[in-house]
Length: 164
Image (cartoon, rainbow, N blue to C red; front, side, top):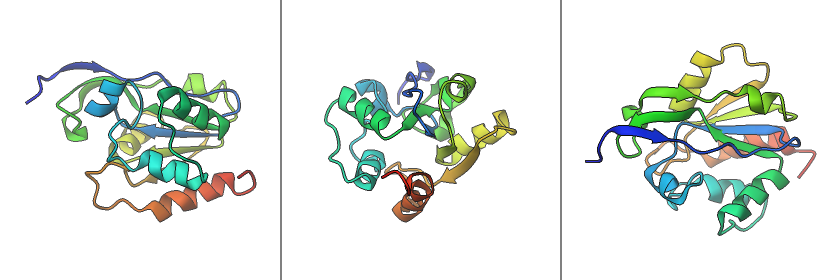
């Protein structure tokens, strides 16, 4: 079993045109190895999101960043540092929470989408009065048997109907 020690998260991806922020919980082991979000090829995130925009999944980190920014999507995690065993959200402890003010103040944020239960719980706890509508979505993790791509598509339609 992996030693339980402090792990660092990833830097946020956003620019001034970002209108939706997708927040996960904390990077998986594979994401920490690749130094970018949703690095586990079994995770449904990139397949779902690129499919929504009818684009191929970029093969490089730079390509993924360009995809996100071109489509006005900001991406980060609620936890920026924590103790965790493997990739299990249930083992997260002594977490430091993302300071979302930097994104709120520097984007055109219209919506926050929380990818999974832990992201939602932490967001509700630490940002109960966040001034942008937030939605809890089923985790795109391969470990989530309740994943529903149609819920994600509906949420994205509410944001991008007139722009994609």
